[in-house]
Image (tube, rainbow, N blue to C red; front, side, top):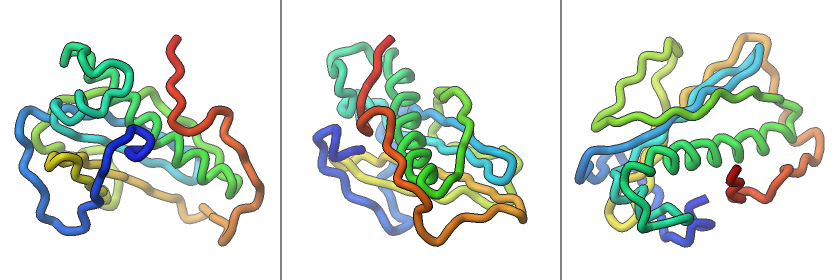
Length: 159
């Protein structure tokens, strides 16, 4: 997705990450079905979200909460497209924005969230994935069907 936005991002594999340079903004969305449920949370400095906004990089910073929600929605939509090929159907909540310097998770999941971090122009873009399955959840070893996305990934729909 970051490449689609025209930026060079580097995946951070270590625990050391750039410190936030200003108040961070984020968004999260939860999803699931009877056997699988989870949440995806995004966090980034406002300056980075402003830089990544393809619609209007001159928009006021107050509009960045909508862009943060759109970013997390696009990532989780890509996840949905991948698992759909394995016959896993998911229902999604509505993305919500948040202000945070250091998110603390209290969603009731048994495992700690997995952190996935990137750096863009020396600013950190962090995702946390919380995922939990029920004992009867089954995922095929390979795709069961070829499922196409309704829209090309990364397409912005304004309504």
